[in-house]
Image (cartoon, rainbow, N blue to C red; front, side):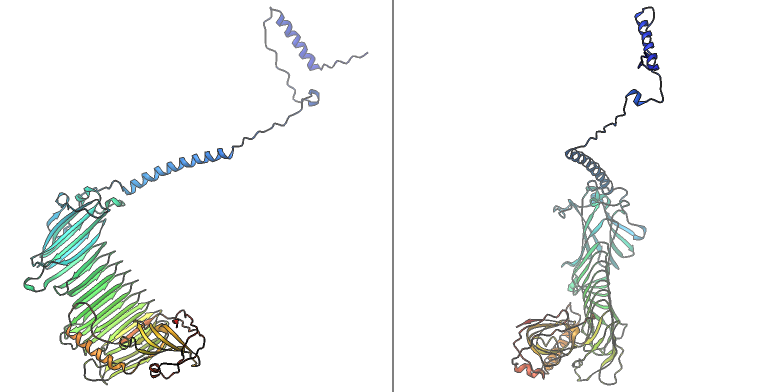
Length: 629
């Protein structure tokens, strides 16, 4: 019999070893030793051992949405606090709003400033009882005086953080001094240690005031801002005469300037007002030579001048009236107005002591702005050279009836229309007005003079680009208001009504209007109608209106001669007008046919049949806008 032992050789060896170990353990004579490690079998048979591999189960932990939200929220709050702390520190370092820094030496006059007579700085400033501007917690004042008989009186500024306003006025008390009061508003008390106001003399008998502040090397903050108010008080003239100033100058930055109405109480040989980032307003001044200059600011006011006037600015308009006096046998009196991105609106009187002769040069140049230039008075037999240039905007130049010479109106890409109406001889001699003209597509040239064969040197030019040019006399239109008028458009349509108003660009408004189609077979009545000047072919007014206009021209001319050298305001009558308008495409839409009657007054105005009772009216986008009755 064969007995199969299920014990493997390895197992037998292990059992034998265990038996020996047990025997040794039981025998105290043998020391106890740890059992040997099991034998290594590199080719273990899972079937033999009965062991099978088990795939591990991976347990993934998922956070709840609430936990994820609070964790992200906490991170965001932490980042916000860190970013806020960093930004605050950086802002404090860069701008120092809460801690204005006035460091370094206070400013002093330079060598070329000349002799220093007096300076006010630090504790020398006076603290006024009334507070300063609301957003400035501190204010201080300084007062200095200059000799009124100086060869030059001037004001200048130097340094950073300055802005303010200059007022030039006149007192009623005759003295030998010009008072200059400077008020400063500031944030930090130590600022007064770094603001210096000095009386200097750049050359012999040329006295001025300098406002000096530090040139900041770091980027300044709000805490270093300074606001100045400068009040220059001219004394009254002695013995009731006008005060005479040889030369008066201002050159400031970030200041606006105002000059009071002093044209008849102060006369300047020369006045120069310069500023940047601020406007200049001169209510009225009288000067032999006048210069007003600004950048990024408008120029407004009235100037009486016996030699030259110059207005220059950029990014600002010019609105002025000028009385230009000429000595008849001397050099031309000149007026120049130059700006960019701004409108020029000027009224000019050309005058001489005798009311005869004289030579004048006038220039008006602008870009991206309109020009409106009107000559409200002009001597008989005077020589005028007028030049007007504009781009991308309209221009209107109204010449006085006394103008004699050649004229030219031109544009780069539009048509030219030239028209003429009667005018009265400004000399009162009954001479006949002669106008010669030559036209082409984009220009008109010619001459205008009184009496045949007269040779004149006058010249008027109006040039524009991207605009439309028209030469039109508007002398009758002011008197024609509320009078019947016939208007024919370039497309053949006619509008017959009463004139309400008309501007310098011949845009007119009519009331109680009768409209006739271009073919003459359709008629409408309009309560009111606005007609753009660029669409008009011609105008017709009653002949009886000419006598009224002649009388008004005579009265205006006499009033202009009696008021020569007076203050601001237009005088005299005008005859020729050069109009430069933007080119436009004009379409007049049709309306419903109606029938009806016509007033007797309107029948006498134009040989057309008019019907009334309008049933409907369209609104034209560029030519006319009508209100149905």
